[in-house]
Image (tube, rainbow, N blue to C red):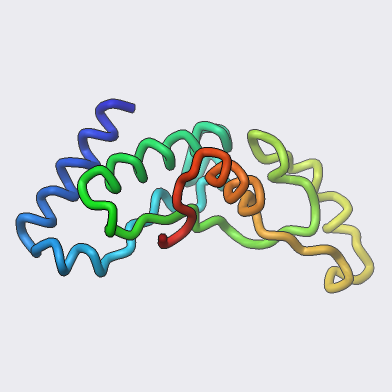
Length: 129
């Protein structure tokens, strides 16, 4: 994790040197893309992603508190519990696959409620703050 934080810090500092702080303050940094899609975009657990987010947002905000950091861009809404645990559970998709009316199901965003609660407990900014 220390090497990741170093990479993020040096990259953001480089962009500020190159483009100026005013310009970089307009950018929105996303911490990873679709980390719930294991193993295609991420190979860790939900908590490991949340910890990566904490380390990344802390490093960026340490450089300048006005920099905008957010995440994760997760991959869809689902009407089942396939992403409820630490890793995806494909067996939880069965009811969705056999539903007579998929529009009647309770579609929810992947990880977002858990992520917002996790950030609130740690007083971390949430997406694009």
